[in-house]
Length: 292
Image 1 (cartoon, helix red, strand yellow):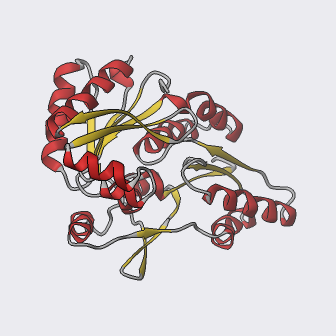
Image 2 (tube, rainbow, N blue to C red; image 1 turned 45 degrees about the horizontal axis):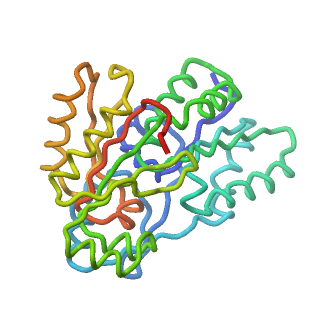
């Protein structure tokens, strides 16, 4: 049995089935809709479509940081059991939440000086983080030490890539990713951004194409360029209630990249979905190091 607990958070969009199967210890992230607070249940309630339908109808979900005290409530029972913690966190460049993790760790290690806790900043969010979690957890199940698993994550985290496009620029405008003027002109010209996670763990637009079909073709092209080992690419297609486009993307990927082991498809979670909006489609995989 491992002497430490493998932990991560729901901003990975890790489907709840994996949580149950692997008995993962999760931190669940908050969001608010119409003034009511919820916690991301990773699809357990089966209400993902309802969530994006509510956004189409005008709901504006809001996300927030999980406070230090909440992390302490997650971590302290584990230390009390005499176990250490490996925490696989989402990108420090997309939220300040990781600072509350560090603060909770510092506070608790003063109280439990015999314990250890390693935090890995994956520089990822959503499915790329899921890919890293599942590969690292396989090492955990093999009995690898906390230091060995953390070292593998640090060495390989930039191989987890995401390429996505959004359907409506208004959500990027709300999140401050683009200006109101850029959103207006982009909508008028039917421009679709191609967005990726960078080496620094940020999001950046690498291309703009006209129309949805061209955007999906570009996602396929990015996967072709960056997958070097199809059998171990662990491809995940995410969508924010855009199942038909996700199916088209899967078909094209299978056609253009022979030898893919499998492609999983599931919903974007509510926290990530609040910032990208309904209609978002992404291809995520383990491949070459991120190009930018």
